[in-house]
Each structure stands twice: as structure tokens, then as C-alpha cells.
Image (cartoon, helix red, strand yellow):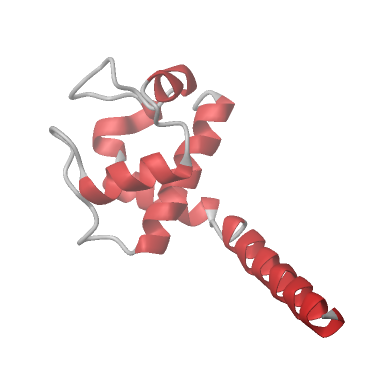
Length: 111
């Protein structure tokens, strides 16, 4: 039983390590480059030239249930309304970097 407990603790520790490394794996600088090249035509400064009320500002993201990496990643990957899907154009890691960049900028007020 003791060996099982140690193995379980080791497995849980390894799982935590892998998950915590993934959550810090985002490259904000890469996200900014990808955003500038693919998103800024419509979303410069966190704005939205197509649907002005659907900005990338913190309060709007929160109000629309988009204040998370998962929600933004889903939207960028699949698109919605006038926004095209980038899932076939950008890698998963690039999309995750963009999502993290958007959240970091929304927290800073898009300065």
C-alpha cells in the first residue's frame, strides 16, 4: 500500500509539473507578432472595426464570457460571425500565444 501511495504521489507531482509548464508556455512576444500580422487590421488597440461594441477591452471580454485563454482560443480557432476561423491558418501554439497576448493587453488597458 505504501508503494502505491508513493507512486500515486509521484504521478500527481509529474502531472502538476506538466500542467504548470503548459500554463506558462505562452510566448507573449510571439502572440504580439501573430496578432499584429493577423488581427490588428480589425482589432488595432483592442478595438473592433466591424462590430465596434465587441472590443477586446477587459470589461467587454468579461461581459461576453471571453475573459479566458480557452474562450479566446476557441473564437480565434473557429471564428464567429464576421471573424474568420484561423484554425487552419495558425498553429495551436500561435493561437494560444495570441489569446495570452490579448488577455495581457486587456489587463493593461491596451496601451
